[in-house]
Length: 159
Image (tube, rainbow, N blue to C red; front, side, top):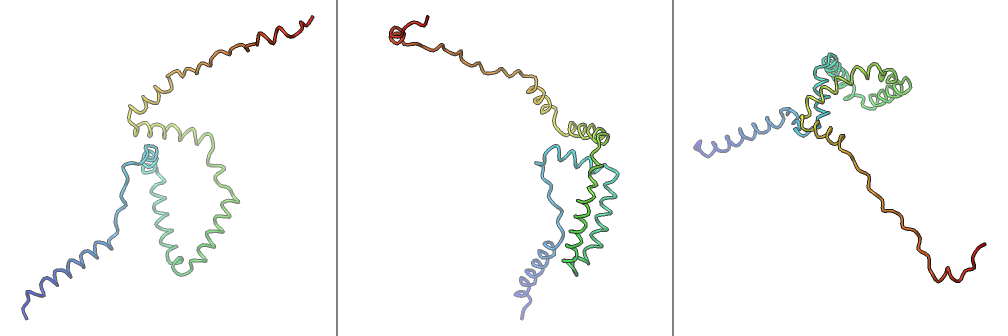
């Protein structure tokens, strides 16, 4: 037996293994370039926010803690999520989040981020649309009702 007939099979096997290895490798999510400017501004704001790192660490810790529970007891995890969701709805913690002072502090930051992302021509077009006068449509003048001359002569005058 010669080694030449086995060589293509070995190469095919190596190529197949390489394709399988690459397909099992985690892929980075593809980011869309067509995202809205407000979404890009919000993502940029969150990336620079001090709580971003804390949120990422908490997310990793929760995934690490909950993954074994989800594997062993998925129904208990769903029941626990139902209880936690019910408590959140009952406590309504979002009532204190949207205070006017908080909104007044965040609104200028979000507007400056949005203005930095959106091109100047777009802002100018929006401002130009606000300054244009919209002339109302002129309604045609009402025409006086026409009377029939024969009908007027047959009626008696009202004195």
